[in-house]
Length: 423
Image (cartoon, rainbow, N blue to C red; front, side):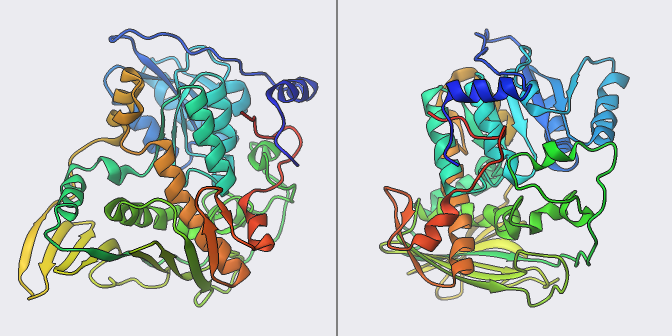
C-alpha cells in the first residue's frame, strides 16, 4: 500500500473514529516550560520519562502506553508527587494534546516512524529511541518531514553526547593515527533463550490491536510481546538494531561516513533453538570508497572480544583506538600506549532540549539524518543476510542496485488506519 496524502489520511482517520492531529506548536519564551509526552513506558520509556522530568524547564505532561497496567503504574508516580499528567492508550489521540511540545518515543521499533511522523506533522519536536526506523524508506520520510515542518528530531544514540567520546573523535580526526582504514563495531554479550510459547488470548489490560498498529494482524503470543518483540521481524530489527546500532553509530561517527556503496552479511542461529526469528550471530561488512566498517555480533559470549563486550576499534596506519564502556585508548603500532580518557560527561536529553529552545538543527548531537544513516546500516545488514548475497547500494536514491528482491525490504505494507502521512 502506498502512503496516503494528508487529506486522505484525515478522511480515513475520521471514518475510523481516530482523533486528528493538526499543527499546534506554540511559541515558547526562553523561560517557558517545555511539555513532554512519553510513549512506550515498559522499558526505556520509563528512563526517558525520568530523564525529562529531571531536566530544568521541562514538565512531563502526558504518558501513553497500550498496556493499561503499565500506564497506571507510571502515572501513579506523578500523581503521588501531586503532578498533573494526562494519560493515553492511543498515541494518535495523544498528539492532539495542546500541552505537548515534545513527544519522546520508546515504543517497539515498528511504531517509531508512524508515531514520530504524526508528531512532527502535528507540530511537535521528537526524541525517538533507536533504531530510528523499521525500514530505510521510513527513515528517509521522517528526515524529510522533519525538515519540511522545521521540527527538532533527536535520535536516541546517547553516545553522541558523551564528552569523552567527543574527545576520542577529535583525536581520530587529528591525523595522529594516520589514515584510518577500518573500524570494527563489536556487539558481544550473552542473551538467554526465550523458549517456545503458544498463541493465546491477549490480556484484558492490553489494547493488542493498537500494539500491532501498522504490523500484520497476528494472534497474541507472550513471546512476541514485552521486550521479546525485538526478535521478530514484524516489530523489531534483531539485536543489530537493538544494541548493535550504538556501536555501528560510533564507528560511522569516527570514520565520518554516511551510506556505504555495498554491504555483505551472513548470520544465523548458532545458539538459540526457540521462537527467535532474528539471528544470534551476525557478521557484516560495509564498503566505502577508502574504508571498511565491520560489525560482529554474538549473543552467546559472556566474555569480551578484543577487550570489549560492546565497543569499537579503529585501525589506522600508525596504530589503533579502542572505544568501550570504560573509555577510549590509543595504542601505537610499536605497542606503546597513547592518549586516552573516560567516556563520560554530557547529557543527551539536555542537548535535545537546548535545540528545542534554539530551533537550530546544528545544536543536535544526533539529528534525525544521523539516526537515519545508522539505522539504515542495520537494515542493510539484515537485508543482505536475508537475501544471502552482497548488495550494491545507490547512496543517492537509497536503493539497492539491480536487486528487486532486496528492494522489497526497503518498505512494507501498513494496516488500514495506520498508514504513514506523506510530504
